[in-house]
Length: 144
Image 1 (cartoon, rainbow, N blue to C red):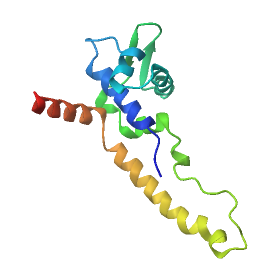
Image 2 (cartoon, rainbow, N blue to C red):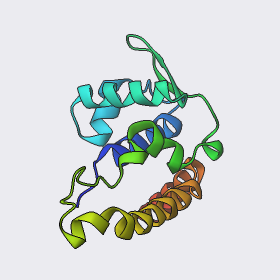
Image 3 (cartoon, rainbow, N blue to C red):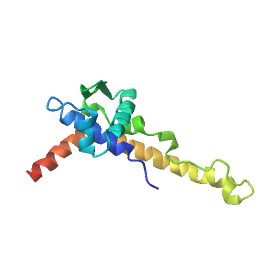
Image 4 (cartoon, rainbow, N blue to C red):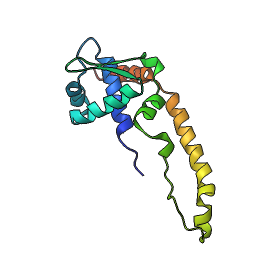
């Protein structure tokens, strides 16, 4: 199974907004150049991030800015803004009740998948944008 690319794209956007504040207007065109996707994807993602209370977006060429400091925004916040965490693992709705696997699959597999989902969300909650920015700065300094 492959997860969607929304979390990495949204995280990239937020990191650029913080990294380039005061240096560049973080418009959808500017952000699209860094992420290397169509500006329409950036605008949609910014809309989701705005709805989640993570960014403010100025119409036109005003750009975007974080609403909270990067140390207060976790990857879980970003994930919840752009993904449906409740639908991370989707079961077939009506497995065959006449089959021993079908009638038991939800109970047998469901609790395990819920544990995996919760572990993933806990791990995402442990990482902030500030952590990622620090690592970007460190890696970038090694290249220079």
